[in-house]
Image (cartoon, rainbow, N blue to C red; front, side):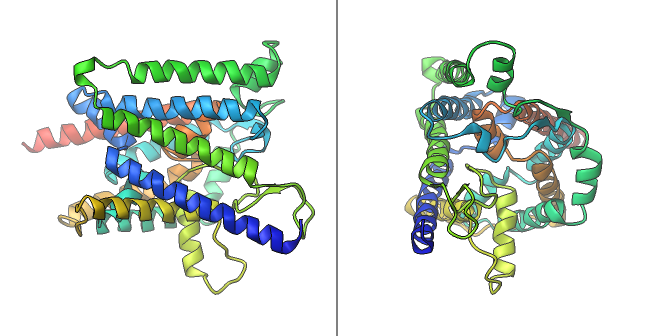
Length: 372
């Protein structure tokens, strides 16, 4: 592939990602897709509808990824989450931090992106602080304890740490076949549960939103893993995937990519800093949410109520930035993208995120009752 052809492919991929992310942002805002909101609905009022929405998104993503892998549009061994170790301590601690942080920060990274599109200056501050803490955990001061004390505590595996590969090594069959029936089977169970609410209680706007979010993640895998594949980079001659930050196959995630946007803005004149998949996805989600808020005439400037509100959100944003990097993803990155590939650590990270959110919600409830 020549340099002009490669540059054209990168531009095409970035445009496709931006448009897909814009659609995702509009859908998320229109259907109130929010994992923190789903957990709080269950904890506070016993309403499982938005939890079913999240399950539908995961179910669609699981089925879609399994099919893409089976037809060889995506190579699971080359996705960003593929590694031959289970970083269980980072997944647990990072997940707990992220779960607590998203409660204090009024939503996860994706939710705050859609709120920025609706005019929330509060969410803009959350995202900036989350980006700074995430970047510090990627390459700065908090990256040292992350690497030394947490990532180093892991379980090494002879194969990439995905459930299908582990089962295949145990003699359950060929990896491709195991991934297909396991991914589609688990996905079907989640889809059935998602639609299993009593008919009179079903909110079709919410449920369809879950299906569309899952479909967006599947489309992201296809764009990155199939259309973005480059057999030989024109300069390095290496096999890679165009427009991604890592050179590997990526899908949606909204912690480290927010840090990459900040890095790009701060060092814009540095020609080595270029827009990549994740950064463009972040901008696309904001743009899509903005269009939706304007169409619905819901765009409103919003700020902090008081210094206590500001302090709570600053702490939450910091926890999300550090925790999201440690856990290798957020409620979208781990909660939909990674788990769709049946990564073992993603199950641990998601459980920790939900547990952290429940702890924070119960603590908030206790505090409010104490103040009453």
